[in-house]
Length: 515
Image 1 (tube, rainbow, N blue to C red):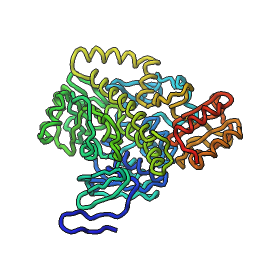
Image 2: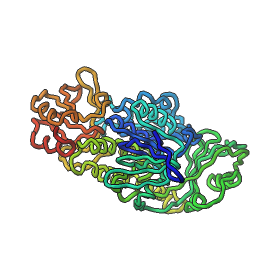
Image 3: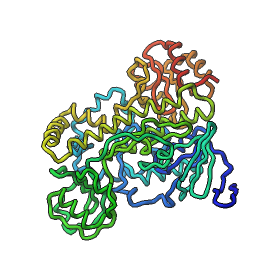
Image 4: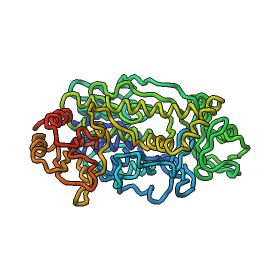
């Protein structure tokens, strides 16, 4: 119930939410799902009235989902709700089939399926989810919204955050003419994040090299442009299907930073310049610009205010890693913030969100910068482009680039000597046919015991409902006898032999509290 105050004071909402999230994009909505799954009360505030936008739909809104994201969706029983990947191939790739099918790219340089040696990825079992698939922003938002609402999340659209104040105990948020109270505020409100700006976060990084254009237009002579992605001496253009274009013009980001409107004449001029053709645009339907500006918040937390997704880091959308990076933030943060709210967090747990995710963001930003460096229209870049192209046409080269693009190498440095520590848990298939991913739908940590060791169950029981004890053998145990898995699917302890209980207890105490 809202109380309307006199004068210009905002209407005050008396509900004190555990968490207020700014932004109802995929990252904000998925974080809301994680928090609500852990029994937190959540309010999502979104400035846009209408969640639907042409730029969120195919082919504009197409996104390649990486292995960690796909595993995350599977572990929360959301992967089954995605449909687009079942009926549409990636329109940004070629139509070849089999070994010569383009599986991905680095700076527009393709690697093909036939060169990717998945046997080098030792811990990816035969029952693993796909390493990559496509979706679109609108599909993800629809699926996440449905789940969030089913879990009791309040989503209010058409409310832009205009101010907030935090104390030692909570945050008061003003959104247009209303006021909301929460214990925590998380900014998932994109590259121009109001939460980040008002929260005093430093946003450090590098300035752009190009202006990118995403365009829907009618072309009089689309045959003059190559299908797929074409890197030229002046930039890059991608024609995913006639009339749907992505263009990169190396103007130092000048046009994106200007106040000029995006006219048909301007887009045609840029397209002709980059493509080296005299192609003509008869009608311009939709156009937007973006750049390769690469910036990252130097901390992801200021008191009771946190950042995730594009609010915490921005970079060129080359390879589509931004969405995956943001969803990884949400998966990492959700259970840690929930444990903090429920007073079940050991010292330093919430701070580990930044220490784990910040280096991953650094890697992605550098990956993006490296692509831009070899796409620049200059001789040095063309020389690098040729060398990288040769490397990617080898089996080891293609396997390495595929692993980086698909997030296979993603892991956290947790200080353990076991090679699986800090990595995503393999999707073990247990003796009854159940997979470990299916057992993670509830968002609980799991102590997986392959040898029915009663002492392990006793230890798990000490942590109450925080750790689910599972005793079962698996089709392929990878030589392991037991593993401890966090709610986000990351292994924090593993052993190939008789468990060292003091080491297991130490690992469990780092992430959970007894009782």
